[in-house]
Amino acid sequence: MLGLASLSDSHVVQLYEWAESSPAAVLTCTCRQVIRLPTIPRFSHALGGQNLFLHHQTPCLFVYVCGMIVGVQPKDDHIAYEIDDGTAVLRILVNRKSIQIDKTLHFLTAPEPPSGIPECYRMPPQPKTSRPGYGDASSSTSTLSPPQPRFNVADVVMCVGKVQIARDGGRFIVAKSLASSRDLNDESRHQIKAVELDNNLYRQPFDWNRIQADVKASLATQPTTTSLSRPSARSLLTDASLEHGVDVLPSLAPHRDKHESIPDTRLTRDEARKLLASDTPSSPIASTSAALPGLPRSSGTSRRKLRSQAKIPDHSLTESYFQLQLQHHIVQHYPHRPFALSDLGASADLASLAHRLVDARMQLRSTTRRTHATHSAAQASSEQTSDKIRRLFEWALRKMMHDGFIVLSASTVPRSSTSGAANSDSYRLVTPDYLLGFLRDIIGAVDSQPPPDHHHVLARLRSLDERFRFLNPPVVQDSIAVYLDRYAPIVLD
Image (cartoon, rainbow, N blue to C red; front, side, top):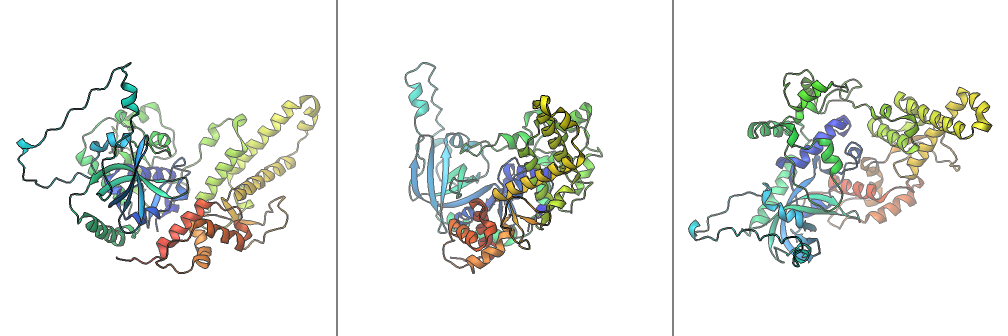
């Protein structure tokens, strides 16, 4: 299993960039495997809400599939292809932007087989038609014309695309490169290659050296350029959207492995300029990159502190922000074990943030009621403040339970009253790994039957255990995918 608990936020960002930009991160899969790809919920906070998928023990964003087109649906702004490779039917979207950048991608750049026709007799590439000028009567017609399908039903195509999540929770691909197969045996070879990689690579524990090897390869092949021409990692993550638009894949930054694990120290302007220009290869800051991979994180090495708390003024603090920081703390420290309210209150960062929020709320109330509550606000004791802090933690726990983020631990008996959360109550983070034991009782043995509907499984979970009444369907769907992927035997047709 991928060492998720051993990765800091900076490592997660570096893993996302590798999966998004490196050609070696494109996984060869079947359509059925793509449909069953689960997400990694623990990485969503570090990635700003973006999804990173997990194929067995290998993270991925882009996949390579091959199959026969069984459906074509032209739309106003895109074309939807449905391909079937014998395992499942997968939907592929090709929009205007992906058609324009189709020739710039390098995933499917296999040399063309000799055709026997001399090059002098081949049709040269036709020049692009001139763009109509402003005010031309045909300008609006040409820009709004729907894209024309380049492939027909029964064509065998090879596609490299980014995995996306549909509104119903299913998986589809936004094509980055779509090419027609020139050999009828390409589909069979693709199936064999997918099974070989599945057994020999994707099921093995993920090796962090794969990222380092790609960085070294990019250093050897790419010329040295300044960092001003490349977007930053944070901008790539924040600019990404969940829409169907397709963006050109950014190149892997050659000095990414040197500066991702920089300690939490503020640099001067000159030091930051030197780091951006990669002028300090022997800097002691860069020497810390040797401890990147999955060693257990200690409190003084690679753990990323929540420095943003101190940057936010007291008057801008909200209960929602406190809940977000509380969720981040739970994901980082209690991914696989129960916790109680006292455990959360023992955190110095959370206690300080809660104290600041309570003081800000009390100050706001004393300001609005200055004429009536000036004397009472001055007499507010530390016991009242601590009681308000405890109620703030209780509110956040109740809110997270209602959102389906956490549940009561199995050792805790649900109380009939939900007015408060006792200090003795223990909670668990809802993850696919935690739900596997419950899915084993509902689904049972995995056979060749179609996968169970996640709505039916969710209804069974809610009826069997009252703690799951606020469970979210996406978590159940990801849990089913992990369960089927872990216990399903490999079947070769």
